Image (cartoon, rainbow, N blue to C red; front, side, top):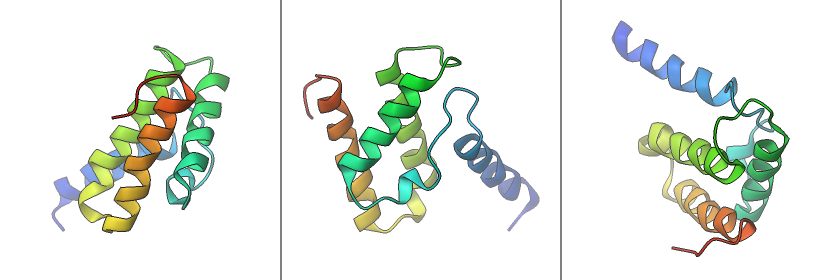
Length: 98
């Protein structure tokens, strides 16, 4: 692995683990239940006093960021759980499913 590629991987891992906007539950993205992932992200977003946008947008942004950064290395089953978590998050906030 080239030095630049390692730095990029460390950068995205650092953001996921130490976001300045949300304090995430440990291993939240490893949960098998999409509803549990969504509930955890919602709780983190609503508890945060450092986020810059609405709790919904903060939670969805973190989930999307993780999928975009880790997505190419995730098994299809894990991607499916996290994609389903997006709809669960929308439902928790009274937004339409996609």
